[in-house]
Length: 194
Image (cartoon, rainbow, N blue to C red):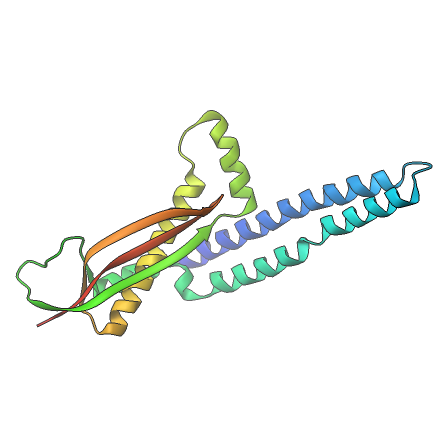
């Protein structure tokens, strides 16, 4: 039941983000169209405002495409990392030290997982408002937690493909790719027990 609620919340947030973006684009279209209605407006200026109104509406198509892709991500089981990671961690041992006490192992190579994650327009807007008063920006905290879990799962998948029993010396890295989006990488050494 928790998975369904999480998926519903994620879908609702995605739809809300596209709706807010749509309202912003609609305001631009209405503003440019209102400029077109100015009496005795030169023809070239009318054409310019009409083109600007059309160009303001154009980003809605990519936004709807992105919403469709996000729904596909949400509907896939791997997109609920909290559930998936609990299952994966029972199978694959992950430690952030360079040995496992009482175990001998052979090194298989490096395992890594990476993801670039972003929040929707609404969350970015609210995060901007939060910077006016300070405090934790929970939308970004959730985004980074989700990104870490996805990156760790991808690292585990890569280690499993190598035939590993564990990943040692696990590390995380993060960098800002663009405003509102962060890359998170999880990496470590895949090992097989002797």
